[in-house]
Image 1 (cartoon, rainbow, N blue to C red):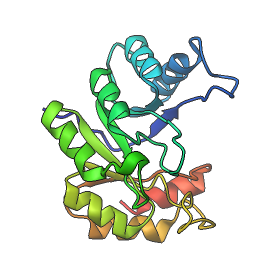
Image 2 (cartoon, one colour; image 1 turned 45 degrees about the vertical axis):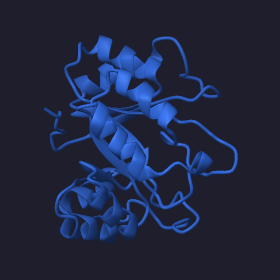
Image 3 (cartoon, helix red, strand yellow; image 1 turned 90 degrees about the vertical axis):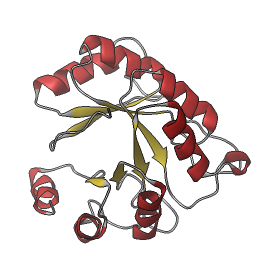
Image 4 (cartoon, rainbow, N blue to C red; image 1 turned 45 degrees about the horizontal axis):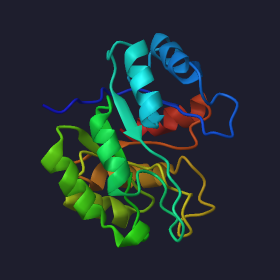
Length: 200
Protein backbone atom coordinates (compact mmCIF):
# COMPACT_ATOMS: atom_id res chain seq x y z
CA UNK A 1 0.00 0.00 0.00
CA UNK A 2 1.30 3.44 -0.97
CA UNK A 3 2.35 5.91 1.71
CA UNK A 4 0.21 9.06 1.86
CA UNK A 5 1.29 12.59 2.66
CA UNK A 6 -0.59 14.46 5.36
CA UNK A 7 -1.60 18.06 4.70
CA UNK A 8 1.20 20.28 5.98
CA UNK A 9 4.73 21.43 5.29
CA UNK A 10 7.10 19.28 3.25
CA UNK A 11 10.70 20.43 3.80
CA UNK A 12 13.29 20.17 1.05
CA UNK A 13 16.52 18.84 2.57
CA UNK A 14 19.03 19.03 -0.27
CA UNK A 15 22.52 20.24 -1.12
CA UNK A 16 24.50 19.93 -4.33
CA UNK A 17 28.24 19.24 -4.54
CA UNK A 18 29.11 22.91 -4.86
CA UNK A 19 27.09 23.91 -1.77
CA UNK A 20 28.35 24.17 1.83
CA UNK A 21 25.96 21.62 3.37
CA UNK A 22 26.87 18.85 0.90
CA UNK A 23 28.25 15.65 2.42
CA UNK A 24 28.60 14.42 5.97
CA UNK A 25 25.58 14.45 8.26
CA UNK A 26 24.31 17.97 7.50
CA UNK A 27 21.31 16.90 5.41
CA UNK A 28 19.90 14.19 7.72
CA UNK A 29 20.36 16.52 10.70
CA UNK A 30 18.43 19.18 8.78
CA UNK A 31 15.64 16.63 8.35
CA UNK A 32 15.61 15.87 12.08
CA UNK A 33 15.32 19.60 12.82
CA UNK A 34 12.48 19.92 10.31
CA UNK A 35 10.69 16.99 11.91
CA UNK A 36 11.03 18.64 15.31
CA UNK A 37 9.50 21.78 13.79
CA UNK A 38 6.44 19.89 12.55
CA UNK A 39 7.23 18.85 8.98
CA UNK A 40 4.99 16.13 7.53
CA UNK A 41 7.60 14.90 5.05
CA UNK A 42 10.79 15.62 3.16
CA UNK A 43 12.04 16.09 -0.36
CA UNK A 44 15.57 14.73 -0.78
CA UNK A 45 18.12 14.37 -3.57
CA UNK A 46 20.44 11.35 -4.05
CA UNK A 47 20.13 7.85 -2.69
CA UNK A 48 22.79 8.58 -0.07
CA UNK A 49 20.87 11.47 1.47
CA UNK A 50 17.51 9.70 1.18
CA UNK A 51 18.81 6.66 3.04
CA UNK A 52 20.61 8.79 5.63
CA UNK A 53 17.44 10.75 6.38
CA UNK A 54 15.51 7.50 6.68
CA UNK A 55 18.02 6.20 9.23
CA UNK A 56 18.12 9.42 11.26
CA UNK A 57 14.33 9.61 11.57
CA UNK A 58 13.85 5.82 11.76
CA UNK A 59 11.47 5.92 8.81
CA UNK A 60 8.94 7.94 10.79
CA UNK A 61 8.03 10.43 8.03
CA UNK A 62 7.65 9.98 4.26
CA UNK A 63 10.42 10.99 1.87
CA UNK A 64 9.93 12.27 -1.67
CA UNK A 65 13.04 11.06 -3.45
CA UNK A 66 14.67 12.42 -6.57
CA UNK A 67 18.03 12.37 -8.28
CA UNK A 68 19.30 15.52 -9.96
CA UNK A 69 21.39 14.51 -12.95
CA UNK A 70 22.38 16.76 -15.84
CA UNK A 71 22.59 15.22 -19.32
CA UNK A 72 23.81 17.00 -22.43
CA UNK A 73 21.11 18.08 -24.85
CA UNK A 74 18.17 18.24 -22.44
CA UNK A 75 17.03 20.70 -19.77
CA UNK A 76 15.40 17.88 -17.75
CA UNK A 77 17.48 17.08 -14.67
CA UNK A 78 15.07 15.82 -11.96
CA UNK A 79 15.07 12.01 -12.20
CA UNK A 80 15.51 12.28 -15.96
CA UNK A 81 16.10 8.65 -17.02
CA UNK A 82 15.42 5.03 -16.15
CA UNK A 83 18.85 4.80 -14.51
CA UNK A 84 17.82 7.28 -11.80
CA UNK A 85 14.37 5.69 -11.47
CA UNK A 86 15.91 2.27 -10.77
CA UNK A 87 18.20 3.75 -8.13
CA UNK A 88 15.27 5.44 -6.37
CA UNK A 89 13.22 2.24 -6.42
CA UNK A 90 16.05 0.57 -4.47
CA UNK A 91 16.28 3.48 -2.03
CA UNK A 92 14.31 4.16 1.16
CA UNK A 93 12.14 6.90 -0.36
CA UNK A 94 8.36 6.53 -0.26
CA UNK A 95 7.71 8.69 -3.34
CA UNK A 96 9.60 9.16 -6.60
CA UNK A 97 9.57 12.67 -8.09
CA UNK A 98 9.97 13.04 -11.85
CA UNK A 99 10.26 16.09 -14.07
CA UNK A 100 6.88 15.86 -15.81
CA UNK A 101 7.29 18.85 -18.10
CA UNK A 102 6.74 18.48 -21.83
CA UNK A 103 10.43 18.99 -22.55
CA UNK A 104 12.47 16.28 -24.33
CA UNK A 105 14.38 13.82 -22.14
CA UNK A 106 17.85 12.29 -22.54
CA UNK A 107 18.11 9.75 -25.37
CA UNK A 108 14.45 10.25 -26.22
CA UNK A 109 13.20 8.49 -23.08
CA UNK A 110 9.48 8.92 -22.48
CA UNK A 111 7.79 9.99 -19.25
CA UNK A 112 5.03 7.42 -19.78
CA UNK A 113 7.61 4.61 -19.89
CA UNK A 114 9.20 5.74 -16.62
CA UNK A 115 5.81 5.85 -14.90
CA UNK A 116 4.96 2.39 -16.22
CA UNK A 117 8.29 1.01 -15.00
CA UNK A 118 7.72 2.35 -11.48
CA UNK A 119 4.20 0.89 -11.43
CA UNK A 120 5.47 -2.51 -12.58
CA UNK A 121 8.43 -2.66 -10.20
CA UNK A 122 7.50 -0.73 -7.07
CA UNK A 123 4.77 0.23 -4.63
CA UNK A 124 6.17 3.77 -4.34
CA UNK A 125 3.87 6.69 -5.13
CA UNK A 126 4.87 9.03 -7.96
CA UNK A 127 5.10 12.85 -7.94
CA UNK A 128 4.91 14.90 -11.14
CA UNK A 129 6.99 18.09 -11.13
CA UNK A 130 5.14 20.33 -13.60
CA UNK A 131 5.21 23.93 -14.83
CA UNK A 132 1.94 24.33 -16.77
CA UNK A 133 -1.68 23.25 -16.44
CA UNK A 134 -1.41 21.18 -19.62
CA UNK A 135 1.47 19.26 -18.07
CA UNK A 136 -0.64 18.67 -14.97
CA UNK A 137 -3.46 17.28 -17.10
CA UNK A 138 -1.05 14.94 -18.86
CA UNK A 139 0.44 13.83 -15.54
CA UNK A 140 -3.03 12.99 -14.28
CA UNK A 141 -3.73 11.04 -17.47
CA UNK A 142 -0.51 9.08 -16.94
CA UNK A 143 -1.61 8.17 -13.43
CA UNK A 144 0.66 10.21 -11.16
CA UNK A 145 -0.42 10.14 -7.51
CA UNK A 146 0.67 13.73 -6.78
CA UNK A 147 1.19 16.79 -8.95
CA UNK A 148 3.59 19.46 -7.71
CA UNK A 149 4.12 23.00 -9.03
CA UNK A 150 7.89 22.49 -8.71
CA UNK A 151 8.88 23.70 -12.18
CA UNK A 152 6.59 26.74 -12.34
CA UNK A 153 8.78 29.71 -13.39
CA UNK A 154 11.76 27.39 -14.05
CA UNK A 155 11.04 26.46 -17.67
CA UNK A 156 11.38 28.63 -20.78
CA UNK A 157 7.59 28.71 -21.13
CA UNK A 158 6.99 29.91 -17.55
CA UNK A 159 10.15 31.91 -16.87
CA UNK A 160 9.49 35.15 -15.02
CA UNK A 161 6.17 34.09 -13.49
CA UNK A 162 6.09 35.10 -9.83
CA UNK A 163 5.79 32.16 -7.45
CA UNK A 164 3.91 30.97 -5.59
CA UNK A 165 1.43 31.49 -8.43
CA UNK A 166 -1.78 31.50 -6.38
CA UNK A 167 -4.22 31.54 -9.30
CA UNK A 168 -2.34 28.64 -10.91
CA UNK A 169 -2.55 26.65 -7.68
CA UNK A 170 -6.29 27.34 -7.47
CA UNK A 171 -6.71 26.10 -11.04
CA UNK A 172 -4.80 22.91 -10.23
CA UNK A 173 -6.82 22.36 -7.07
CA UNK A 174 -10.17 22.74 -8.82
CA UNK A 175 -9.31 21.19 -12.20
CA UNK A 176 -7.25 18.14 -11.30
CA UNK A 177 -9.57 15.44 -9.98
CA UNK A 178 -7.59 12.29 -9.23
CA UNK A 179 -4.07 13.36 -8.25
CA UNK A 180 -3.39 15.33 -5.08
CA UNK A 181 -1.76 18.77 -5.42
CA UNK A 182 1.50 19.86 -3.80
CA UNK A 183 2.26 23.60 -3.82
CA UNK A 184 5.99 24.09 -4.24
CA UNK A 185 8.19 27.08 -4.90
CA UNK A 186 8.60 30.61 -3.63
CA UNK A 187 6.98 30.12 -0.23
CA UNK A 188 9.30 32.36 1.80
CA UNK A 189 6.90 34.18 4.11
CA UNK A 190 3.91 33.63 6.36
CA UNK A 191 1.82 35.71 3.96
CA UNK A 192 2.72 33.52 0.99
CA UNK A 193 2.08 30.39 3.05
CA UNK A 194 -1.33 31.69 4.13
CA UNK A 195 -2.26 32.41 0.51
CA UNK A 196 -1.17 28.94 -0.57
CA UNK A 197 -3.15 27.26 2.20
CA UNK A 198 -6.23 29.27 1.23
CA UNK A 199 -6.20 27.54 -2.19
CA UNK A 200 -6.92 24.24 -0.44
